[in-house]
Image 1 (cartoon, rainbow, N blue to C red):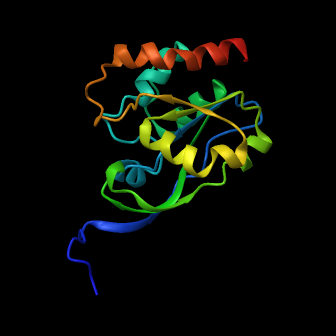
Image 2: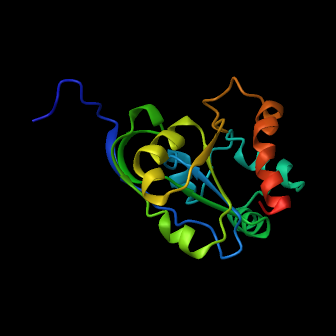
Image 3: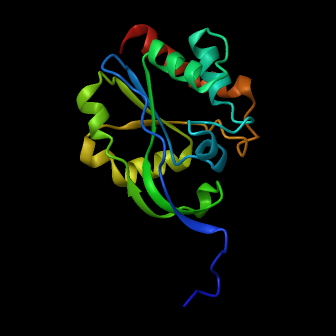
Length: 175
């Protein structure tokens, strides 16, 4: 029996993208859950209006990577690990606000293997779920950064760079 408020576009979803990291990764950037576009492209931050690649490339002083292969190489070359907090959930489209029935990803796998000095959450939803499901278990606080999502249109690329530049400081200083 369906609920009267049930959304027909709402569906259970399992995270389809493996994490990107290696032993020399220094920072871990966590999103909430892949957007519909990212699930279609099979890689993180796949929506063409998402500013993640533009912002991280600027932080690292590089050109914006275009292909999935270039994006993976960019992350690894710059000691950046990327994954999402959520392994599975019920979600409507790409709406973070609709997320429920969350099962978290096993982030300890990355932390046991990689030299992660700082964890960053890309947006308030990732940060909220990290704090709820991971922070106490892992014993690691995360820094909340403003979302690079196109839904966060109030933040220009320049303004995002002002906050995201702290990632570059950790990468350069190794702290």
